[in-house]
Image (tube, rainbow, N blue to C red; front, side, top):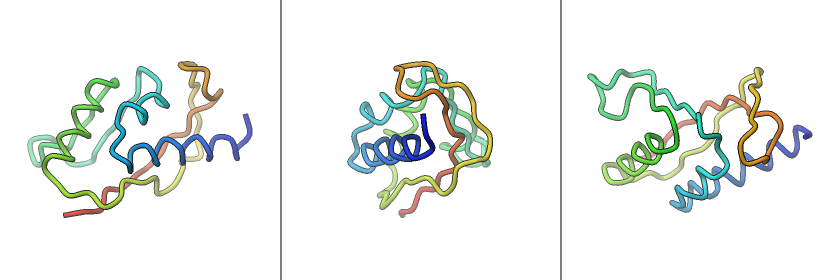
Amino acid sequence: MSEADNVRILREAFSALARGDISNFLAYMSDDIELEHLLPREVWPYGGRRRGKTEIAEYLAGLAETYEIDRFEPLRRAMTWRSWESNNIASKQPVVESKTIGS
């Protein structure tokens, strides 16, 4: 799969998230997805690490209930790649750094 294909897939996934379509967003992710916020949960309830689609869905739903989110988008793609075998969507999965903008 080309880099352009990977970028398209990321845009589609984050577009679903921007629409609030968490299930469609997660359909693009592998079952062993991980999300890590640098602040620990003891400091911020949405900090720390989340593993798997269930924890990510709960995290995103909690954010949406607590904050008005204007955008949730990738900032940059890390230069490393990990295998992505689920859903046969792509042969490689970028490690993505993202940010949430809102109040």
